[in-house]
Amino acid sequence: MLAYRFFVVFFVVLFSLQASAGTFDIKEYSQSRAYNGTTVFSLNTNPRKPKVVEVDMQGNVVWQYQIPSSFMNNNKSLLMDVERLENGNTLFNINQSGIYEINTNGDIVWQHKDADTSHDVDRLENGDTLYARGWVKKGEAHVVEVNSNGDIVWQWDGLSEFDVEPYADSRGEAGEWMHVNAVTRKANGNTLISIRNFHMVVEVNQDGKVVWQQTFKCKERSNRTGIFHNKSPKGCRQHEPELQDDGTMLIAVRAPHKIYRIDLEEGESVWGFDSRDVGIKSKTIRDVDQLPNGNVLIQDNNKLIEITSDGEVVWLLKVPGLHWKNRTPRSLYKAQRLPLKN
Image (cartoon, rainbow, N blue to C red; front, side, top):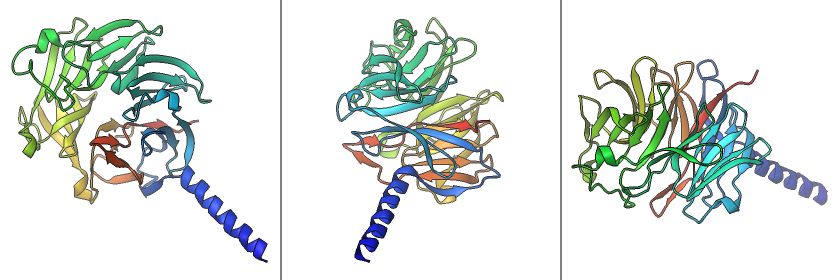
């Protein structure tokens, strides 16, 4: 009888451990209103052992990849962007390490070593890879495009446009100049670049000239709510601008942790979302994605939130145990909703 009880207790404990390792807490889920699929994201709960994780709508892990310790240059390395490619492989970058592409078995099929890679990496239609270098100093390339051989085919240092006042002597917290935190290649061949330290999103052509910009104005650090130029909404430290087909830009703002949709012609906000309005406390919103059904997927410090256009929360995944260490965010960083497989 004692042996039987021991077996039952052991089985329950083992099952609980497996369940906790294989599921995430789903706080909200409206199957009829959510864009159903799987969600892949970077997970830095354990900063020494980050993972790329894919979950279903119930929070069950359907695929994951443990980042090898050999990829982690030191305890300051951070798993940042993650992207599921059309070929089924997964592309991700690790600051102070490089960019990696793996297949579903976890085999490395391509890599590009660059310790300065950060924030955002995209595989382009021509097979090249475009990425940000957020913490580099003035005079270095802040955006780089490499081909499949790892050769640099395009880069942007911003000197011809911004080595003038009031930008020339700008410095971030880590001594970086621009702090580029997002890059997107547009269909016209130009590149959309988010420059956090300048509170600006710019579009540059192949010659590196700025052909369009949206500037945001912030107050001093003691009061970082600030105001946007052009009658736009409050906020600063913008992240992940997404240009939409309707002539608007969807963007995440870290202070005060909101998202906005901005009319690009008027420079004014036409829609916004503050998680506090629905009783959710946000820490660090960095990523916002427009979903095919009109919903929006938001990445917060320790949660993923899907909302409708009227601000209803229809899916909420929460990850416990995320923390800050030496003021460096060890958290969720990027997320991508994938459609259901046929």
